Image (cartoon, rainbow, N blue to C red; front, side):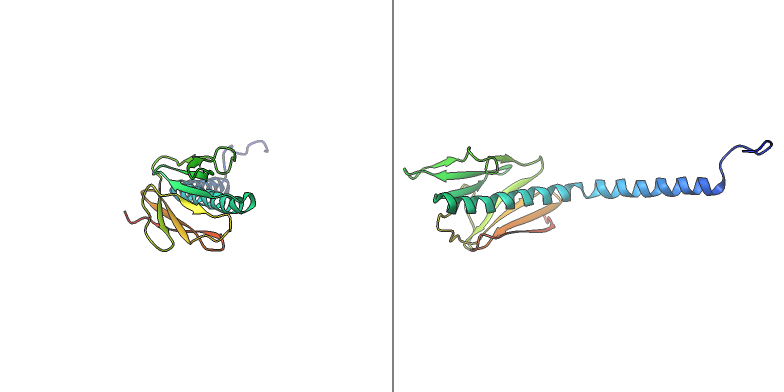
Length: 162
């Protein structure tokens, strides 16, 4: 800065600051608006991974495993030699999982038919499982987590119509 030059900002410096603030504001607004959707996607993919793990584990250990949905949580089960189901507690992936608030989960179908709320969907040791679907929902978003007879699990999202 030379002697006699006025202090302050040039018009270009002010415009650059305004543009940077505008871009930052846009990013913040976009992230806030999609938070519930991203959370639903994250939970659905977590569930999908656990379902694939359960199907593979049932084959590997040659045991009957299952999954149930309890409204705000889901749980994996193991059927004992006495025919009773007990909660899986020796596997971190299959540990009972509570969903974030405002999310619910329900069993949607098994072998193409509706399922009772208290049902346990089985994963057979043979690996031959019926197609199934679970619905993970929030007030704005719904995710369908579906498994096919080859134990591939896919997630399909859509806006909730509740």
